[in-house]
Image (cartoon, rainbow, N blue to C red):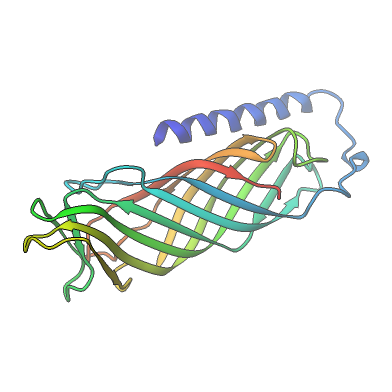
Length: 238
């Protein structure tokens, strides 16, 4: 995860360095740039892998997924439209697949996560959903046409918990019964606010993204101190 952020940060630094190098030349008259066709808002869709850092003995498996969708408003700097600030509302969701691990959200003292080697689960996942507002500081090599050229972004996203649930498909349980689905929904032990650092780098409408959650996933004292992260592909500029 750190390597992904590192590569994105290096790309962002190179872009900034290139801009500073160009500043040594005669300054561009940005008033001559035609920004009339530059969209002020963009739909951004993200899909990728979701994981937990600092998970201790908790075992995950397979391809845990993250889905995010935001409607971003872009505000270019008048002094240099290569740079801009963007923000907007959206939704984010993570689906963590667990292996030989069960999560009890109904316990009165908090979330209980235990090892289960008896029950045979075809699938066991913990899902969380958020209403979020990302904030990005952006650089675009082609400010007149955001659908072309290199683009880089660093930022934060702040969200509030909207959904938390467990869903499991049981092949065979301790009572020799199987072929049924377990569901339980309750997010009272999830942290009410999520704050995550974000980064993106790409060409045209396609980019790679990464995020790392700075806040607790569960409320302090009510669950393990895991640190969710994600990375994957993003499509923007729609």
